[in-house]
Image (cartoon, rainbow, N blue to C red; front, side):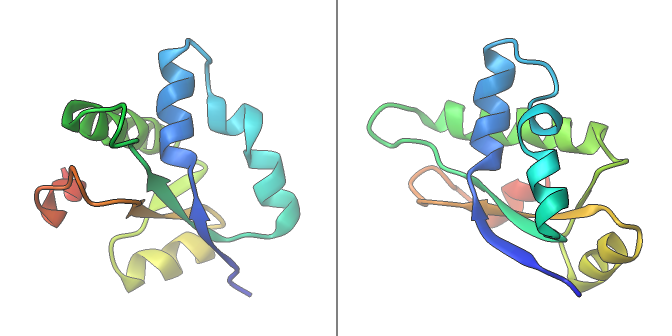
Length: 114
């Protein structure tokens, strides 16, 4: 059975943790909880505080966090379309759907595919 977590501030957590020098933040802080809960897919959200952060922070968060996720291909599969969702489930990887909370800094949705 597929079980979706509809909102997790994981992208910003990965980004902020890596900036602080914390190595492998998802594996250390979140992976066990995801595995124990049976969650198969999650919407990883980038929330960039519009009162304290900039457009650069917004895009840096995506760049850093997505590079981290891609480097952990044994754990994650980024899902851009339905086939990716089923592939993630069949390969027992956590399906990651990219999300944005607040649209102030998003110029074009295609930016998320960079």
